[in-house]
Length: 123
Image (cartoon, rainbow, N blue to C red; front, side, top):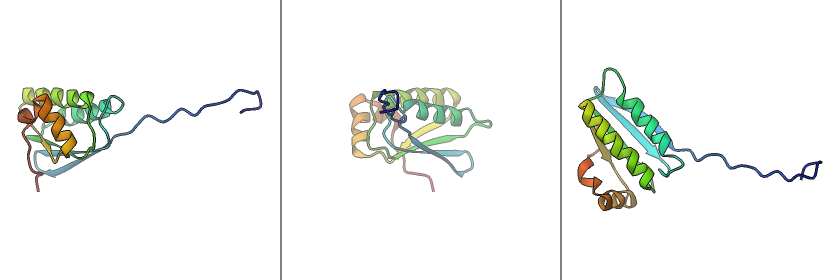
């Protein structure tokens, strides 16, 4: 308690999503994601994908490497679905790589696994 008798409660920091962008070759952007993608972190993923899809000149291919994602809820799936539509509208191939079993299952259940397809990571 403080001197005034008021108890202060620490507010937990907002969860952070790790997002690293690599450029493994001409026209290819790889967005490596680590952490849980849920309602609290989906905006971070959306911002990262929007930034990469907005590049000029536009990449031919954007790979979203989700190997570091142990959990993804509907907010994350929604971000990926919107990014897939946006990429298609721009003529950019958007692919998912290395989903863990839990994330793969969510994609299967929602019917999005076929829409994304899965791709190996580019060299």
